Length: 248
Image (cartoon, rainbow, N blue to C red; front, top):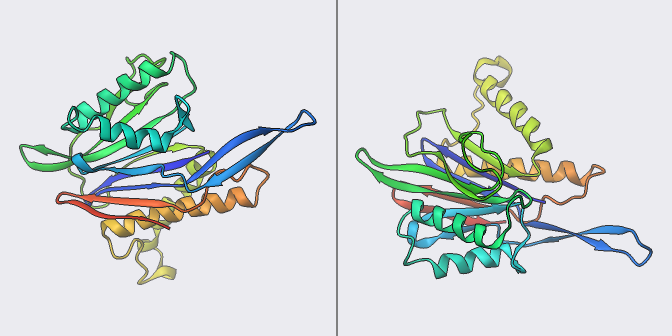
């Protein structure tokens, strides 16, 4: 299982991903069990674009672990993909060459800055199959390079976020968490408390990591397979390029 998050805000782009991969193992008696391994690099840098990419839903592509496959894809298509748009569409085409229509839903987050008439602005592509909440006329049976968040600036306090993987618990936790954070300035019990603080890109990325850690803990104390967890990678990209990339 997986939980990957990408947020675009006034500071730039913050991305976070867990590192767990879950496999089903057959037992000699005829049943099955689950094996969870940690350390998969689901979030990586696309250096020639100063972008980030993360994966969800697919454990392997053509028999190669997805994190290794996408690292090789970045290297092989470096010259042919000079911008986010060409990278996203080339990736979608490659996936459609491999996966038959109506394959199980999976995809990639791709985020970076693009040059516009008003300067560099953050942009986000979601390359995936299945339905899109933003584009209703696409073919959901194949992979599409959907520009979910076109280049734009974000006023203070506003952001665009995309989350994928097993986010059933996360979806509700996210709503409660941000309602609570937004209530702090108006609650005298929390006078002087600021979240996030400082209000910068690194703290926003740490906030994403904290959310994955919390959901990982919920899985650990539930009857669910603890398939979200392990070291968590965060990545931050500002108008001037990469600001941080760390796993812990």
